[in-house]
Structures are given as C-alpha cells and as structure tokens.
Image (cartoon, rainbow, N blue to C red; front, side, top):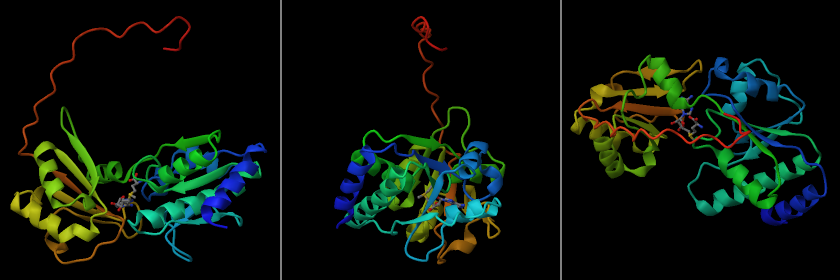
Length: 276
Ligand SMILES: C[S@@+](CC[C@H](N)C(=O)[O-])C[C@H]1O[C@@H](n2cnc3c(N)ncnc32)[C@H](O)[C@@H]1O
C-alpha cells in the first residue's frame, strides 16, 4: 500500500473513532529554558510523542531539546522521516507517509504531540504535516503551541533589537538567491537569512560589496553547548556551516520611511455580548 492509500484507509478508520488531537509542540531553538510552560505540560501529559528525523537513525534536534529539559523519551515515541530535499515529489510522499503514521496513532484516541524546534508556525515541517492531515481528516482537532523562533533567540543572544520603531524586518531562507537578497536589503532595516549554508560565500560577497559585513552577525546552534556567535564574518569565507545557522543583517544606511499615521477612526464597538 502506498502512503496515500494507507493514509486514506486510516483516515476512514479515524472518522469512526474518537481520535486524539494533533499538537504542534514548539520547543524553541535549543535552550530548554526557552520551552514554554504549555509545551512542557503537553510533553508531560499522556500524549504520545512524535518527532522529525531526516532519515533512519538520524538525530532529531527537537528531541534533543526535550532531552536537555530532563524529559525521558517515552518508549513508544514515533520517529517520522522527512528527507532533507527540495524535491517536491519526495517531500509530498514523506508528508503522506508521516500523516498515515499519525492517523494510525490518533485513531487510538490518544493525543499526539509533534516536537518542533523553534516555533511550529515558522518554516516548520509541522505546517506541512498538519495541512496533509487536515486534507485527509478534515474534522481532526489540531492545537499549535507557539514558541521562541531561532531569530528571536538570536537577537536576544546579541542583546540587540531585531527591529525597532518603524523598521522593516524580513525573514527568508537564503535559497531565494542573491538577487532577491540584494533587493530585499534595499527595503529592509533587518534581514534574517535562514538555511544559509548552500549560499554562504555568495551572501558574504554581497554583504561585502554593499558594505554591510560589519553589520552582519552569524549565529550557529543557538542554545546548545556547541553555540557559536560571530560578530564579524571574516572567519566564515570558504567554510561549510551547519544547518542550524543563520545570519542577522542590519542595514543602517536604509532610511525607513515611517508609515503614514492611520486615520483616527476608532474601532467599532463589538456586538453586544462579545468578549472585548
Ligand atoms: C526549517 S527552519 C526552522 C525555523 C524554526 N521553526 C524557527 O522557529 O526558527 C531551520 C532554520 O532555522 C534556523 N535555526 C533553527 N534553529 C537554530 C539554532 N538553534 N541556531 C541557529 N539557527 C537555527 C537555521 O537557519 C535553520 O536552517
């Protein structure tokens, strides 16, 4: 049976039962102290755990964060495979396969807590998994617990604002390419580049050309024992960096035009009986 057929079969089964909820449990970027109380509560509830891995036997950063918080991995925790590829067909097959496993687990009636590094709503596999499950089982209850993003933690680590006043912030994966990054730099006061490894040298050259190297910060494996923070980018040329790394670039030369003040029309009163 293919992942899709399996998912369809288990979705039908699920509809006939009282399924558990799917919970996207954000764990923050690495430091277990940044796990929210709500996320911790879900992980210590009766929910079954599921966590992403890139292949059989691969380590899971999300699972490691939970372990660093002192939590023991339950024996029935479910490893779900999401390959590191941009091949849409392979990715869709992986989401279908993972969704099928989730549906089988949820059909038993227990909640399923999917562990997510950073924030579950920000460039996360959880978004694809939840969307696939929603398609297969439209009535499925899904809870998302928000978390600290890698770039919020990066700004905090530097003790610098991510963006202030009327500043413009953009967050993109570096894979958009140098032209897009160059154009965005014209429009942003702060640019966060995620997944920098494949384009690192080209990005470094661009920042140098634009005179922004001194305004860029490189942060790697934030919140772990292997954390590395570089205030200058010199040591980075020609190096391969890990997946868990980002660049935070400030563009002090850009003069933000503050948005025009909004017309001072007060919000209408909510309908009677609505919460305020
Ligand atoms: C698929 S995105 C996930 C983003 C994540 N959901 C968040 O809220 O930040 C993965 C990218 O996030 C960044 N990232 C996540 N955790 C990080 C960490 N601990 N240190 C540095 N960068 C991190 C890296 O750029 C990595 O390539």
